[in-house]
Length: 322
Image (tube, rainbow, N blue to C red):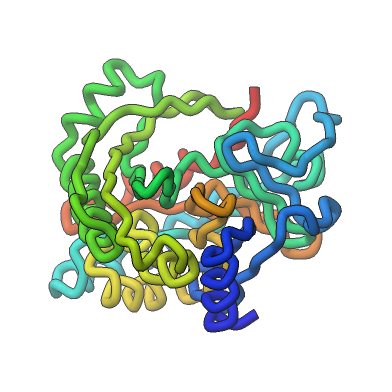
């Protein structure tokens, strides 16, 4: 399906109140759309805040998870590419991502039933992700966004205070909030930041981490209430996984990463005929033949330290199991 076909079909369905699931890749090259009652669970499994087609059970016991981290020096090279553009003023915040090989004692499909996250998606022979981050929600004419920026190990003494008072983390988070506030203003009126920099706790197979989020909302413009396809494309790519300013920063990302992201850092969601819930496709395990890669990243500013950023990228490689 082309992007134009996706927009036309999503707009047509939303105009008639017809529910649909959607999956959009970061590069906007492979959008997909499904009618919920026609989804083959052998091809696609999904869980969106309780709405799911998953009827399996957790068949695996203790998860074995071995990480082969992305090479430090290669990360440093990519970081320096971003830093070059930051110093020249081409971007002032760039989300830099990498992929690390992991080994697990199960299939991605079986792991779908073990992980805990508000958003989960498995696509046969391609990927599994378990995202904690919403992209947008629409509820009774209101549109919401919940940017997530800032991560710290919860076992660090005074972890919440440290992450909330870190000037670099604060500047990065506020930049993304401002970017998304402006994005929402393109499709909504009366846009406001309802909550700024609150803490979410996430339990993983490795540790417990704290992540910093905010809440932004507005009144959806009437023109977009039955044009969901156009709405989604107007807001993409998601600000939290691209940067600012968006257009130039996406060029910086291509120069630094040197490979497509595909469905990683794209979006996934469900329109129920009236309301919408969607996520950013992060915490992403990608299947390439028999090999599994875990894709992770973080925001880079001119004040960033490459070793700290590398540590954060590795810290985000986890599986949220009980």
